[in-house]
Length: 570
Image 1 (cartoon, rainbow, N blue to C red):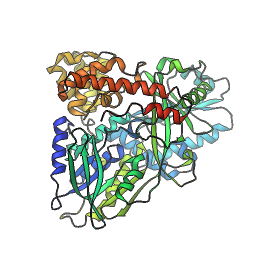
Image 2: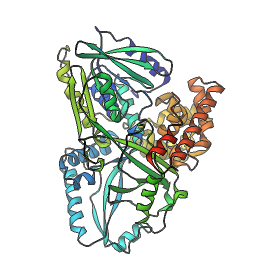
Image 3: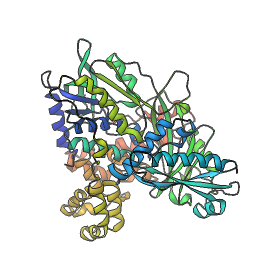
Image 4: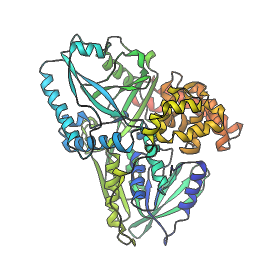
């Protein structure tokens, strides 16, 4: 049960959704294909509810592919005294790294630099509480405990960190994840338990029976096909688009503010350190996060009220992060060191006057009218809790079902790729020998596919040419592009280069050299002709150029105008 998201599976999902009737509706229809939406679908499907998901663009095309890529309790929220959120997040961190997704979620060490002697007891007490909350949770802690370091030790661990003004540091652990791949894994898990998933399908209206919401009207953006999907309950998990969906449904009183966070990607050799780094700034926190052969540097936290589909990083944003990171490293970074830039929007529940940097990441579930559930707020780490709370709210709305709704079991349902991961990891040398791939290539696949590596290796065995590195992005195999289409729901070139892989931020050319080879590999699987390949490549090149232009602009308004000059291909 791998829940392959193939082109045929999408067609079958659309047919199944269109076939719903008033007499035979879905139990749950989810609007939104980010981590919250697919998490809800997974929870519903594993409770035995018939489930559908509609996403107007690609899986994880919004906030869920543009985060700091951390599964963490959140030291920032500990400082805000939000102990409940921190404790909940730490429990989920332990669950994901040890049981649900050990192939995707992995521990990463951080240094918290100490500039004054008085900071050590204060920060140390906070991290002791952080570890204690993790150890006292329902699940294994999953990471080592924190440790105090003196300045000489810090200098050995992080030679490029300025230590002359430090009294030392504290090393502690959190976890990181490829957020977009986590969304794909959750989606495939839901699909394997019967959820019908249709991307590039936009909700255009709601169906009602009196005051009750009984389904939606939707349009397949690939073909123009219009359909009505009937459901006992519709759940809005549209993230920063929550207000728009509420307006469409003429129901709901949640107010979601968008906070923009940008991140820079620089080569790993620009900062010599065995650990990531976290330090406070006057506005938020600064992360320097290990990411394979790169560092991710973030983040900003500023209000955003412009185009929500394509938030843009301005030159001022980039300058801000470079100036902050250059305060703590010996060799200053400049714009030429920046390999990639991405901007995302956090959906924050808020009052009208709060600055976004002070708004907590707590989530809310509400039922404004019968048949409609709204979910908003939250953070990547607690996706499973948000899903549980949403389906728990649905239970009362499904009282007329023949069988009672079961309780949540997602804390015991490993995600797609988790099963067999440890065994395959132990067999990595054998897998390399049998497949003809290098050990590094096998490790790369294990870290992305986990126990499903056999599906990729079978593809390579059948088509040996797919064992070749992808031209222009040699860290990835050609097979991964094909697999993204046949098993991971990729429909367009942008889906592959920006989300199924991270080529768009991991290469200095932003993936432009890999665009045509990748499009040609996708063409055979999606039935594209030469003209369609040209369209896909041209659109991707225009997107990259629009992003580059936006990053030269001084203000958000100018950056937004530059970025939206390259709209979505669908």
